[in-house]
Image 1 (cartoon, rainbow, N blue to C red):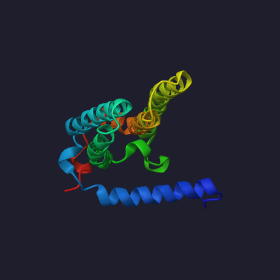
Image 2 (image 1 turned 180 degrees about the horizontal axis):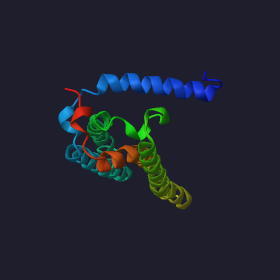
Image 3 (image 1 turned 90 degrees about the vertical axis):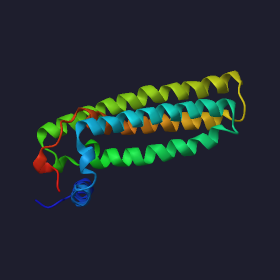
Image 4 (image 1 turned 135 degrees about the vertical axis):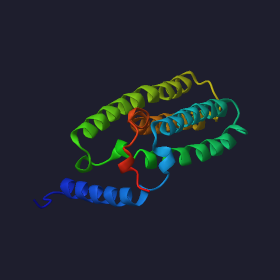
Length: 179
């Protein structure tokens, strides 16, 4: 059946792009595709997020050192996130057409939890910004610190589905790992 509307065409494009990328990356990092190694990546990402939150708090008090700490946080985050996405086959954001019913159910459950995490965590820095703005306490660093905290909570929420799936998925079958 031909794709008839914009959404169907976009989903077809996403599916083709996903399959193309999956065939490109399926042989990368075979030793890291086990559950144990994926869990190491998830814990490392969680620790990076704690560091990012700490940087946001430091920025509230010290705008000289705080922003300099954001670079190492990003330098840890980006490769860890990329590796987790590769070794978990991007199941957290895979198009529906490439997943079976069980995988769709797992992905949707992880996405639902990710949305809840995003909403819950982002409330805290939003309340911080509202409170500090209403009371008038704080310095010029408040918007920067609040922005980093909001950005960090959004990143955490966006990464949560892949982290959940990376943590819970069983080891791949030996036949699924390309040599």
